[in-house]
Each structure stands twice: as C-alpha cells, then as structure tokens.
Image (cartoon, rainbow over all chains, first blue to last red; front, side, top):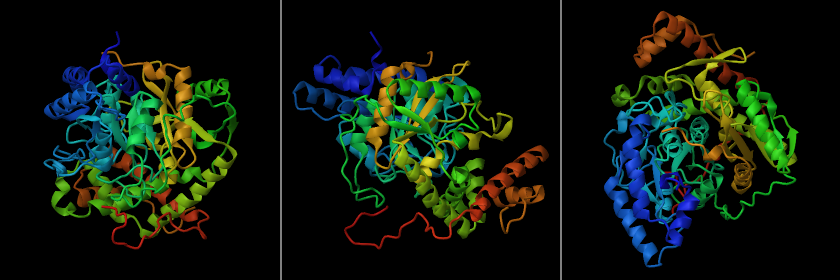
Length: 468
Length: 72
C-alpha cells in the first residue's frame, strides 16, 4: 500500500468520505515523517504538533457523525512563514520578526481553515521573500529534496521542499517574481500563481504590493484546483482583490484540450534555457499536441525588458515597505536583503514609474498574443536547481547570475498579472526536476489547470518522489 | 543607448557597499559585483528608451471610502 503521506489531497478527501482513511492517522503519519525527514531539507521552521492533532481529532469526529462535507476537511497543509498565522510565530524568515506572533490569520489561511484544512505548521522562506533561492533565512537555507547540496528555489522554498518530500499534502506560497513557480520547478511539484486579484494578499508580508500573489503548491493540478477554490475570491481586507465570481475549478478539469491553441514564445523564454530543459519542454509540447492541442510559435513584443522593470519595482516598493524601522533593525537583515534594501534608495522615481508604465505596454503585448492563442507554454525555469551558494552560471556560453536566470521565465507573468502554472516535466541526467509553465488569459485559472491536468493524465512526472 | 546615466565604477561600488550597507567586498568580489550591478542598473535605465509616451503607469488611485475594501 502507498504510504498515506504520498496520497494527493483528492485521494485523502475521498478516503475520509469513504471511511477508509482517518484524519487522525494521516496527521500522525505526517508528523512522524516530518520528525524523520525535515532535518534533511529544513523545510518546516515550526511544527504545531498539539494544534494539528486536536484539529485532526475534531475532523475525525465530524466525519464519523456524518456532519463533515467541507472540501478540505482533515487535510494536513502547511503555510509559508511569510503568511501570518494566528497564535503561531510568523517571522518571514527574518530576525527582524523573530518573536512576532500575529493575532489574526492571513485571509488565505483563514479560508483554508474554513474549508476544513488542518495546519501542520510554518515553512521556510527566503528572508521577506526577497530572493529566488531560499538560501537567506534566519533558519538557514532550505535544501532541495532531490539533492540536498542544492537550493530548493524560493522564495517559497519550504513549501516546495515540504510538498516534494511528502511532509504535508499541500502548501501555500507567494509569488512576486516567481516565488511559487521557481521552488515548484526546482523541487518537482505543481505550483499555481493565480491572476493578480484572484486571491487575497491580506496578512502576507509584502515584498512588492503591486506584484505580490498568493497561491497553492501541490503534487497535482487537481489538488491546486481544490486549494484555489478555497483561497479565491474578493476580500474586504485587500482592495486589489477582484469582485468577480469564482468558477468551479475542479469541475473544469475535463482533461480535454482538443483544438486549444498553445503559443510557444521561443524568443526570450527558450534562448537562455539549458539545452536539456529546452529539449524536455519540446517533448512536453509533443505530448500536448498528441492530446489534440495546436502548437504555434508566437512572439511577445518588449519581453526582453521584463527583468529591468521587475527589478525597479522590487527596489522601489521593497525599500519603501522596509523604510519604517530600517535604521534600528538594519543589522538584523541578512547581507543580501539589506543590500537590496539599500540599493532601492538610489532608484529614481521616474524609473519606478517607467517600470509601471512598461507593465501596461507588456500587458498589451501579451493580450495581443492571447487573442490568437488560448495559452502560452514555456520552460518553468531556464535552469535546474544549482548548488547552495553558487552565484554565477554559464548557459549557452552566456555568463549570468543564478538569481537572474531563475527569475527570467516567471517574472513576465507577475508583471502582467496573468495566471501561470508550473508542472513537473522530466528530470536531468543528474536527477534534478524539469518543469513546464502554462500561462493563460486573466482569470482563466480553470483553463491552465485543465492543460496541466491533461498533461498529468498523460505523464507520470508528478508521481515521482525523491529517494529517502 | 540609455540616457542620463553614468557607468558604475568599482570604487563607487565599494563605497556604496561599505558606507551604506556595511558590506566589505574583496577585490575579486568587487569586480564581479560591479559588473552585475552595472548590468542591473542598465536594465532599469533601458526602460527610458521604450515607447511609453501615451501609456499610464499600471497603478490606479482609489479614493478612500468608508466601509469599502482596504489594503491593510
């Protein structure tokens, strides 16, 4: 029998409803697995053993008396430490917030609890989400479960590593330049960045107000749909949330993508990809074509300026957010994050606003392309996870920073706010995960989840697990 | 290509890192980080050359309304 910690969220809920699984037993199995495996990767930074055990007992009782029908009842999740958790230390991975215990949950956590989810604890993050590797954290680096000498990707690295290693059934992440999709890509799991405004940012420490997104990290697109259903919707605590209806995401997973037009923007997204990532992405496109999709090459005008614009936004907004109290607290930040916060002091206001104007320009470019195709498909990241501490990498004879390479393919969809999903799509010769990124029109999370689901019905990459 | 910007020199980088952030850079680190910083700064400055004349920033002001949604 499959270890119960290896089951999907969908399978857990089915098992609870059929009476073949027990929330108490499942929770106990996760706690034991965290005890055995977490030290290898440093994903969990807080385990709420007593709280989750009590909640699991309540869920079990509710299922037993037939009163439990909530979609995530009894499912053990965990949350990025950037999210505020009522009564639990929530640090954003920074000594600045070393003793911070919020008195209110982030909206996403509150909504997942309302849907019946259990909370195993808090997950490692790059300090204040200001970096793509999760090397910088007051708790130490989060390690990649496929090779613990390598980084997990970040900033939601604890979420990526914990899901990949079956330490929780699913996790929350946040994504400003790719911080859900990069660790999902590096750790071989599924990660969804919804449309800007689809999911509330309330109660999540900001990195960059105008680009911060909240979303689920899971093994499958189906599980991401289940979590998104609970997280999505307008929130009075977040003025950026969209007041529009939330569709039934799981019902949209037909697996039928016949006749759907998939655009492949080879310029920029493939130009600087490691050659084996390029070829694995083309293999994945062949799978989608075999499922009936039409594959067409497209070009996104001005895309080459995405990194500069995103950097201006991080620098401007990040430094503004941390300005309050920075003088007193600056020694508490890691050198890397403190350096970026200092650098933001030298950004000109006009360059910040040019970056915000560029987002509109790029948005028009993407909207033009998405009038001719239904979806865009690219490699999730242009490189696999690298060694912890490695700063530079040469790809196709171009020397570049690991930081910039990691962000290259994900940032454009934070700038434009359109939804993007990463799913596992293979492995390198040395056993590191590859990933496929699927982006779509604003608020078409159902569409991209269905493409991911169709791909996962035809492949088994999402079922692979790191060796213990 | 980009307007109104001076190239970052290693001595500028050393002063900014040390005096502003208290970060001491060795000679080899200084050269490498100056190159990275120059590329980053150039990428931001390059936005000034784009066709943005008739384009507004992607930020919309919302008048404060009691009882409405807020960003906390």
